[in-house]
Length: 599
Image 1 (cartoon, one colour):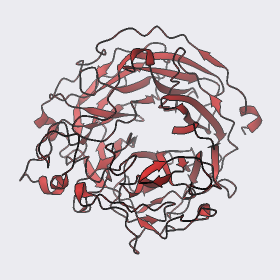
Image 2: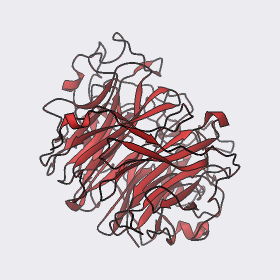
Image 3: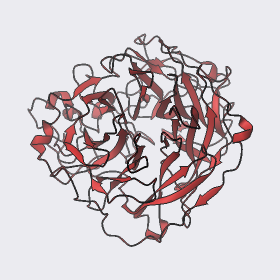
Image 4: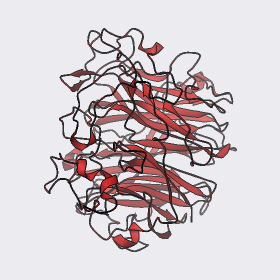
């Protein structure tokens, strides 16, 4: 058994010197599309008879009592409808609140009663290693899109994604205004760990105020922000069957001072049968000490068969790129079968006017205690914060995965990232077959003929070694007026958009509406066919989109990432749609599951 005393040590950081950042006008890999370009018409029909779609989050109705009520509404524009009392609509069987973690709240908190969950953006999906038909997805569970008011929710299937009968919010952390960033992992025993970022803010004239003030914050008895966990034990069947630690909240690291803000947490569990660090849990996150200054950390525990774990270690610092005060963010830990732990990270270079991002790799061969760092790419053209024509913000820039079968004596490593050097966002992919020392020349994943934005790539490596990259795709125009999809898409409701110079509603608009796509590769990155359309219907990202700062602020949200996994020869993604398939008449952000056989 792993003991706390063996983990609560300072990490020895061995940082490989990175080369000077060269001037660059375009990133290598743009235009290098091994499978060739395909027409928009071919892409539009590419998923027919291959991909199944299931709207998971319309199958149940959830309600919970939020810590802070927020009734400002933008209705009727863009399908907004404000915060709505539950009114007995819930059918998930979960506890609607109030909750024990809300005890000690200031006057006016929590809300007077449960509110209806409407939106479901940003997502993660995982498959149970003990049962390939058991899947758990997670997303943000919004009661107010206008107020960005949400908890983490989950949806669960035991029939390979056909139905999702068990749903609800992840309980135990309702005393914070929001909790966020859906990500989880199964251990080797079938227990599911959800990693959570609860944080406090209060509404100040409709704006989010993060001031640390016992007289104003909703619940001064709780830390302002924490990295925390909750475990759904193997065999759980109801919405509220989640465990804390010894009856208390399972807090990995608390943060009580403004100016030290945790974010971007991720989790990996070593389920490799013969790994020397088998069953070790790795939790990673960054702490922002300025608007663009992030410092990465890892904490470690050992998973036990009954769904409990040993105490979390003290946070261990990860290497950062020398010569830049930006530190690093977007940690995505993965473990190869021999127990080696890797994560990709991204930083920006202020001396170059923040034009270009640096992607690098941290590696640990001793279970997360000591680390080395190597460069992957220093010529990534940074994407815009908000894409043209729409108001949703950019998300996580890269995705990372590891192979499970050796090539040339080493387990392959794969990384994909966004690049803006062509004036639109493209997705690049590279591999390393020598443990990150060298990387292949990047290839372009998206094979669209028209110049549009393709973004938020997400990597997966199937048990047979097949590599897949899923991503959001804007190559297809919005439905035209009078077309079969015009009504169900809700385009007529899209009447306010300060970032669009065309006519509203945006019928037929280019580089505006969204689909999800996937590209499959052999382990050596030889492509298996062309991009495949995962969503059967194009959707409008302006409808019911959460506002991240205030209802009248421009920036909206569809998620910083979405989920992908694979099992038993099938690929699963969970991504946003606002399309009405007959179960989403108010055009809320819902999670659509795409299922297809791996070629």
